[in-house]
Length: 316
Image 1: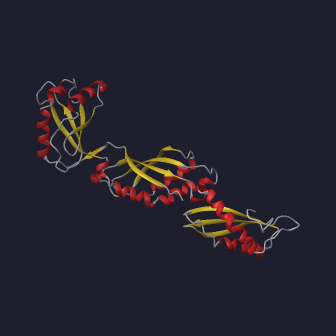
Image 2: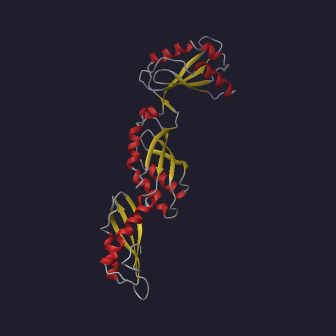
Image 3: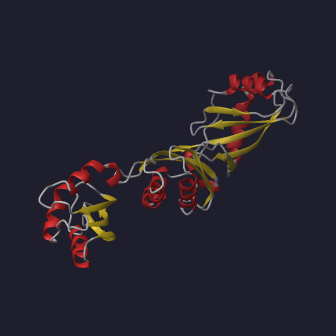
């Protein structure tokens, strides 16, 4: 089987949560910001407005967020002044958001470090653990595709899922954001499976939104249909001969058997139909399939038609 491929996590959250920070670090931030304030004051912010700086673990300012008056122009100004500069590094070695409140932009100390928060992104989750959770659930999610293959045998491709993990590790929300499957029922099934998952708790009480790519290939027998057909053609004539199959004046005796394959062996076989065949012969052919092997096929299903027009020739 072409197994469900679990691709790396893509993170889509820039939220922050309140973090316990030392008064000393807050004071250092206040003092360091003073060296940049002349440039910030040139961005013509109004008193009581706020903007947020995103600091990496090394204290480097990577982003600025501002949503006040003339946001595009003023945000561009703040980014020019601040992005790429450094503030004192956080003592916990994690990325933070720092909210700056404007007091009076015309004063040297016309601002206050209002809030320091932990950034809820990749740093607050164990990516390897999330990967392991999805891999453990891969078989259940694969069933969402397999069920719908009876409707559309070509259903395959990548699916992108967005999901939100609460501070207790429970999935609060999940949705399909992109998909090659193009099937609403398969999508709904995947969403329900993701909502059942439980992840390690994010650090610092964060709620975090992530994305996961899943690649759905076709199950084994559908993906390797030619290999299976070739193998069946090799072993079916012998089974018909062993079970006493022969043509009949009333018509061509036929038995239709559905087989399930796991790890190269038939794990289940069930008779679907029989024509011009007695019960003993039909049971013989059904039982014969249980001993068949399909090297290289990890998992799949197929329907075998035993049509006994001429058991002496292959390919009937």
